Length: 477
Image 1 (cartoon, rainbow, N blue to C red):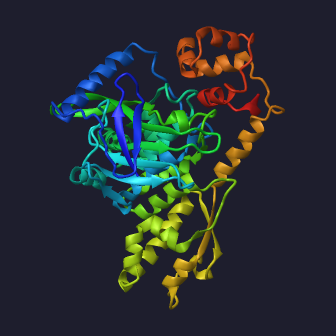
Image 2: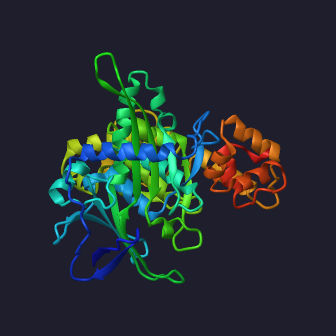
């Protein structure tokens, strides 16, 4: 099944025609007329001028992405899972070079109907990024860092907080990002080094593009999305010159917007809406292990998107190994004793990392030595025992607690109206003006006045966002 893409210059959406014979990608390309870094710098200058005219930047006392210091709701749809796969699995995925000189990874929905084609670009800052052919794409894919998956999860959480993700923006700054990722604790790095790491990783999720073709399914009509951009990310950097004349990165700000896919995968009234819970432990563990434990990073990505509270199927040991190390490597190990030993050691280490992130692995079927904390010589036939084992994973305790609390708080019988004084004091504690708070809530200043004076109650629809924004908890009032 192929897809022909044609852009509508007057819309963010594009037309997609399905072609059974070939994958013909006619994406309108913006050719590079000036060096990429010059374009990025110019874009930053323009963004800074525009942003200075907007509301006062937020002043955060702590990491507001995790208002309870542990968890947050995040968009975890199939489309976003594919992005995380590309960033973490890289060339372990089944990439194919098409006849039209594009290089893509095709992901099929569980129903066997919808298809998503992923591409990569090296110029995500442009309005219509160039999808790369095989040779150039391989260079970009090779540079992807598992830590970018943590950034991707942060974007997933930020976009889920928007009332209309297809039209709203999210803004985050370096102080928040340093806290979210745990980089703030790194004493061996100066601020310039920390921000340089962040800058590289912040761009990577935006370098993954997608084209979606979805046929009619039950009551949901067919749709196509070839906007290509999953994340439209702009990064504004602040520099200072030190005594030696070197430019040092001293601050950055990210302005992000999600692509057209949100109309179908993050719209409660349509199609395939799905959100889940991410934990701060998972995000920070993903960021801290980096390339050192790529297998553990891949397992954490898989768990975050695949383990749902209402559905906890078992996973075979072979499947778990393929998720962590790739099907090709698992197959090769069948004939390589040394590789089998190494992968068994890696699995033991990576499962410990997963446990440190809060995920619990329960051995459903298999020998006890697989979960024993005692180091002992593995028995004969250990490799087959690993492959034939069955595991059941459970959501972190923090995520399960959040699901319970949210269920209780948002129950109509349990919701207690917040007083206007509480809302006003929480806003002032953050140093926000009424205008800025109104902008953050996507409301009018008169709405803020009415809520804070008690002449209007916050609706059940707006309450979760208000609680998250002001970092309030209902059971306190």
